Length: 352
Image 1 (tube, rainbow, N blue to C red):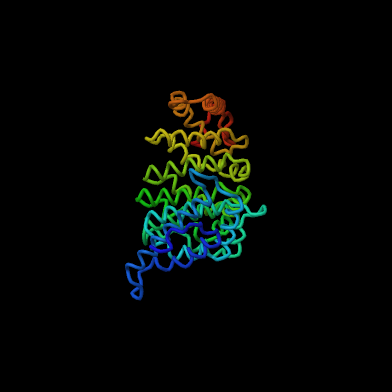
Image 2: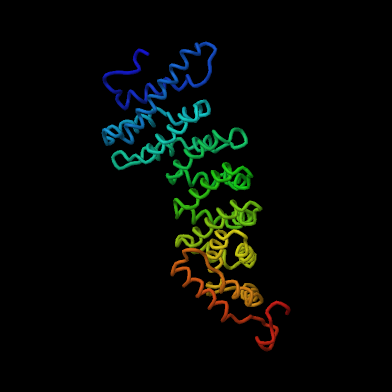
């Protein structure tokens, strides 16, 4: 036990240096006695705890800015994140959780006005590839990697890299996974990617519109209600964001997209219905509605008006009531557009 309890705390630089040395002991080694290895792991646990105190403080003291800066600089200078990616699967669940908290704080640390983590990741962008969760291998460990990845996505350089990579296919794939933990974790990463950096996301959606929304509509039509719920909620957030106005106009000009939202309005889950309403309302509100959308809204007018008239939910606010009234008004006043009929009154907009 000698050396475990020093009268003088380790400096931030010493913490990182000792932590680096001890990481190798997380992997069983026939050349190292198991009792010695367990001693080293206990020491590693203590170092993680000390780093948390430096970064978060404790009941006795608040975190010190200078100590946080030195710990952050040393951590990324010594390439500890890369080492952690290698050794994370060998840490016990408690240490994995604690080290993800440490990393979350380090990602947010600014030193002299700069995010040290962002500068590190820009020079070591391959770390993002290493962090992509491998849910097929070990879901529990993959979720820890996912938590670290979400913090890395705070930095635009990482988000842009992932959006433009083939990893996007994996994020779509894993949201269909029947395992709740896997699909939820993948959805959380997906949401961070598509909402954190608005200009980057707007550019990506514009350039990859067809492929992206073909995959996205499959999420909206998933048999898994959690997948549908996450997808429709995120879709509303994306389309209602001003930075995505161009993409929103394109999305709400598609009859296929509107039909998906009309089906979601009839979902058995009330939350999904509500989120679908926030997307559906954009279709009748579109001032330049295509002919086929107008005609379908008119053909289904009586059913839609009856549904919307009865549509409510607990804790409905004034904004919801106002939105619903506006949608009802828009649909009620629509006139079918048909170039082959002499009179709109003679045409239902669907049989010509």
